[in-house]
Length: 323
Image (cartoon, rainbow, N blue to C red; front, side):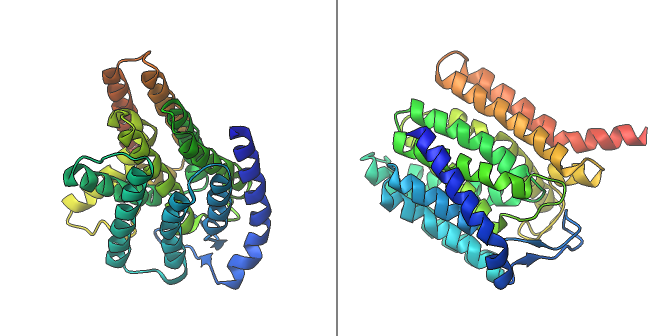
């Protein structure tokens, strides 16, 4: 079933992406470079809405409860509306909390799991919103979302399968499929398409749903979050720096580690490859830990070391260049 999900989602996404340039150009979805951009030429954005059709449609046909698929769709629609109209940050955040609450409730109800109280439910809702937004923040250079997204999707698919959550594993496999289909368009020096907020929200809510399912199924939060290590470290550190400088965390900026590496002369593809490789390591360690071959404290320390190395890499390059 997983191979069918992978091949079907990849094929459908690839066919839809052939139509993307005409459709996106008709809607005026062109990302024009500015001082905060990492690209230098106008590029079509918003292709994620087509990837969502493939990922959610195929996963729904192959076992994901349709009510769950429909609960993920509002995030994608919200992202696409933001691609079109640039919605106010406060409005987006409020909608995300509402959608996250519905998702957590539906996942728990569908699995017949008692969340156990308002506190855990509230924490899971906050976690969903954090993961969605941090995934969105990390979609800033060519290839990083599809490269890391592919690695994270495979990791989550494996963990969900091991946890006995086959229908959600199908969703993760379909996310891997659409990442594969999007690579020729985006994992290159001059990207032809951008995911847009609709695409980054699709990946973000897919990862967030995977974490919620794993946690409710009894998996350690450390294992569930391990595939997201680079995203959590990079996005969180960038937000904290802005808060400490009394700058708005919602305003576009170039403070992420991956952006600073690009600004320092490292190619987009190289940064994305390194990020993807590090994500593969974190995801693999999570699987090995889930199987009982690695103590969870080793997983935590290893992922923390990888995340810390990633966010300090720009400082090390600056230090070496100034010597």
